[in-house]
Image 1 (tube, one colour):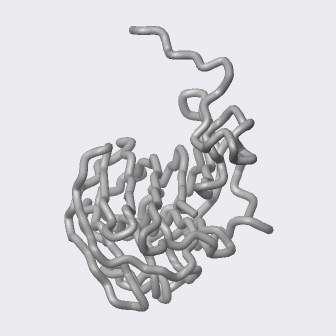
Image 2: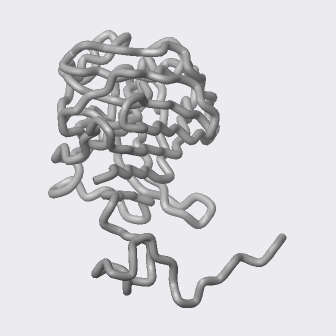
Length: 239
């Protein structure tokens, strides 16, 4: 493997006349970037909310890196919805945005993979049946963008909801028991491109423009202690 190029004086992406021209880095002001590696448990007093029914939130170490765990208690309809208290991210026409999460779902002892309800992505700050239908077969959030999966199927759906109007590509990908997956979407300012493990699986041309919050959601569709484990979440929005 070739040695990496080394730029000891830095790399700039603005002109020398710009006040940031002396900064030996790429211009950090053009994108708003947020990432959580879950080396610490999500703080649910100020920054996050964990709405749950017998859904225990924790952190662990996997491969030397932190992970967040949302563990069901073992009863049907146990749930854990982990989300930012305040919706601050938004998609704007002509501006780029990126979302990515690395996660896995364990079915739990005696459980069946696919008997879970899932959501990974950005959403309006809503809970209960205002977020996901009680029967686990559809989403009800006013606005959202990401990946959903419904009770009884391992399908991952690419979904966008805009003021309760839904665009969805059903079965864009599938998930498997205890198997890590990287789910991403890229907004190019016009369309949204969805990826699983860096492979394009869906494209949608509608998207919400309302303020959105990061959300990780697991609900049990059977009496088994399923677990959602998240390695990291990344959101980047162009200013």
